[in-house]
Image 1: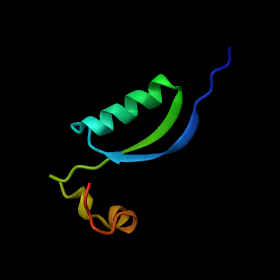
Image 2: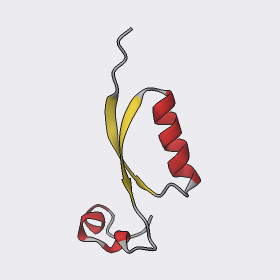
Image 3: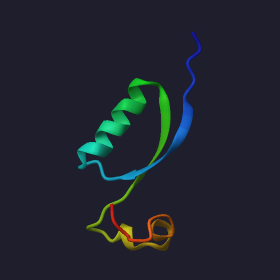
Image 4: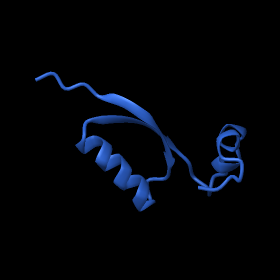
Length: 60
């Protein structure tokens, strides 16, 4: 069987969040590839222009 991963999108989150962990686990279980970008509000990564261009309110 040739199982290849299909990229389904980008997940912005932090590994301490249960919803992020659930989404990553589901993607792995279903053999789907998710580009994971860790966003940590403590180190200021939600204030970066790259993040704010996608999420203008700057919230997780």
